[in-house]
Image (cartoon, rainbow, N blue to C red; front, side):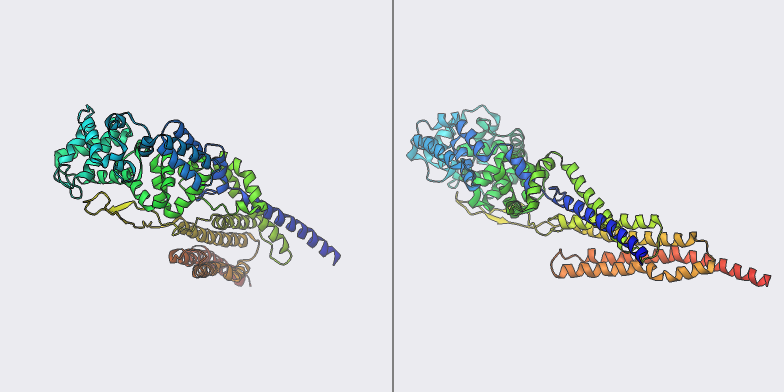
Length: 564
């Protein structure tokens, strides 16, 4: 008895050590702040702390003399609870109070100054933004007189479109309802005269005008004018020229207009997000994918700093919630400590994470197998290694699902489609109707991952069955004894069905209790793979070998009967 207890204790100690070591390695992989379907907030914050803040950007605009843009940046910084926001707001307010004209304009402009130098402020309209600067009759007359003498081809083309008669929602400048179009053309003309368009947007606008002149089709150009008019109501001149310098296409203009109406109470944040993005298309693509929730996460990223915000736009992935980081737990502290490494080495960090899952699972399964060594049948080292290898691989998939918060959240985001239905515009303050739709995809990554997991389980079952057959085949036994051993393994050869049915039941239960998204395809794929696995094992593996044993046993019986 003592002799049998000694190896038991020895194997139990080894198994416990392997199990504990595997659990520690898995735990290490779990806290590594790296994901392939999301960006940990700790990494975003680490990136943001190393660069400028929204307040810093606002101060740069203030020093450049663009008080309107600086004011919006300061308001955005205040919404983001930045410490320097109050100081910046007070500095901007003092500058605007000292110069009432710049308070209306937002920023000094040589062409606007040349046109309106003799127009008093009380001649301006009470409408907000750049619209209020240009809507008053004296202002329109002064700016129109300036632009009519311009030699800029784009300015001349813009003014020429004022008398087109093919508009559907706008009216020619000379008509009684032509003020909206006139103000729009004057604003665009000043932008063109001051070279405030991006190169691509300038070329696209010129192309739209030339096409309208040649074909008479003015629908796309009219949309461009309506989008511009909407922005002129929101932004003063200083803010407007910063926005147009950032937009690269007419589609960008339409999307900016949509976003400003969608987030009408957070327009300073929209302005800050647009100006701080390296490419406006990155911002719009992100919101197209993640919608309102994505806007909130971008707001959190921008609060960490501009570089953190740029990281989120570059990755185009959802940002994890920062609640864990603020909890002060050991896990959050370890994640914060490892964030600089993950930021500098994202691929290596991800490789370390999933390698830790694999190695830890392999060691844990090895440790568990040590406890059952005394009552389980002896198996070949190859079969044991294969079981642990595929078990560890399956565990990696499980840990991937558990550690990736947005892997199965395919329906959690209602992205923007940036679509408008615009009514006939007879007044400047016409209402805008926004129509939204939600795009769908044919198969989500979580579904593919679930199907791959079930396929991997059945591959493991098939490999175990194959190795078992090979093990029986290599034994030095009579064919009839081998045949009995094969019959004794019928439950093993049917295990694919058991695993498949269990996988389907577990998946359906998890869907019913809302742990995962409802997806019957992923659930029933387990049962399908189980049926295919058992069919392949029985027909292509077990049946041929049993036939071979039956024939060998028949020949052995015949030879023995002949000898007798």
